[in-house]
Image: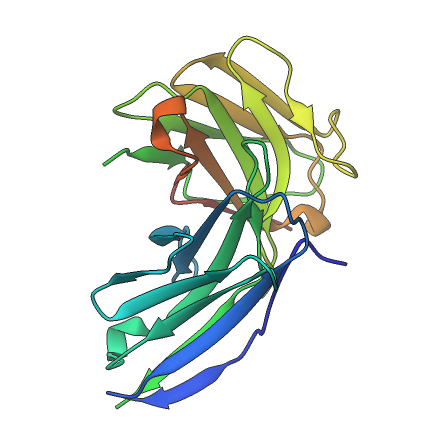
Length: 109
Length: 116
């Protein structure tokens, strides 16, 4: 079983729509969780950390469910510039990060 | 924010040659640097973990004699792909980590390697 699994998508949504997707992780001892954004042929960039109580950053909301071992990302009022691949990243109890394969989101005008 | 650079950003080479990729942390000292490889439509796969002044730790299935890593200082790590073959063509990304970064890794812009 992969350490981190994501629905690859793509999620094709119109501008202004809400899109949400999940990611599951296998190591129950994982301590830190992140969503990274990766544009085509670019390096990943940190979008937001995911906290136990859930957190929001503008139009982005992240949730963590430790019991079911998944995290989610919700994007409200989608913009064209939100089109990207979103990587779920999990940090087991060491420095290494485990990356999901990414969920592709395409926002259309 | 922390800035990590990579050089070159892209390289095309002939099969059998060696290619060196540099990863530098520009405004901070990185305790640890990581080297990843990403094939199209796949996730980043960790190749090795590099600590300054010590030997790199390679992930299972990564040949240490083929992918030579040197971490000479707290701001520079190099990855040399020796005797490159077409199947080594990939996107190589480094990241840098320091204890004060709370598990966040700062990524370089990546190096796209094409082996003919």
